[in-house]
Amino acid sequence: MVTIGVVVLLFAAYAVYGKAWRIDAEQHQMADELDKRWNRGAAADSPVPGQPMARMYVPRLDKKWAVVEGVRQADLRRGPGHYKKTARPGEIGNVGIAGHRISSVFWDVDRLRKGDVIVAETRTGWFVYRVVRQRLVLPGQVEVIAPNPDKPGQPPTKAMLTLTTCNPKFQNWQRLVVHAELEREQAKSLGRPAELKGLQ
Amino acid sequence: MYAWIWRRLPGGRAAKAACSAVLLVAAVLLLWFVVFPVVDGLLPLNDVAVGEAE
Image (cartoon, rainbow over all chains, first blue to last red; front, top):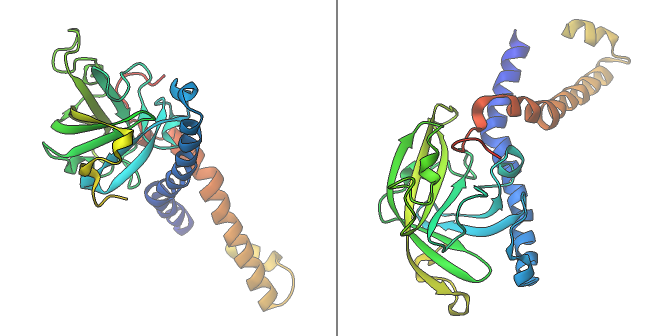
């Protein structure tokens, strides 16, 4: 009995820390891979499933990630994943990004408030989004990543970005959703956006 | 179970202790790097996407 208890505790430690470390390690690789792809130029602009496609920064949470293409479990083991059929950063429509609710990914996403900055970086530009709202939905509510999440079924009019993760923490019966709207974009030649000041 | 393992280990007390430590570390590593990742994939902790992930 004691043995079983110890193993269960060890598994809890794995779920909280082990997975976070693994994703951190994968993120280092993904970051390098992304630099390599961007150095190759425009040829690297069509995303490959399981490979990094953009960077995302959230100054409020002091986080940045290499976002992987796809939301299969194999993709999400490497970091936040981009829903393949959704828009890409900067486009009119809705960029959908899913991530695990663990410390190295979207653990604290519930702390994002209206007006908080989310920056996406692609090979060609910076895209500064601001959070417009947060909500809890059921797992089947795919309209949150529809091109026009305010009026699903209607054509999109704005460039939006939506984060999804599980809620409550370590459970799966809801999804926590954060919508953000594109505020402005900035050319790579102008350097990092001022909104990222203080973030590594 | 542990008493049985202890009796089966060779050598004196020090050798048995060393062997036990090695076995313990091996068991933990096996769980952490092999068993837990598999179990984790079977549990519903990882559903973060809406709709069907594809």
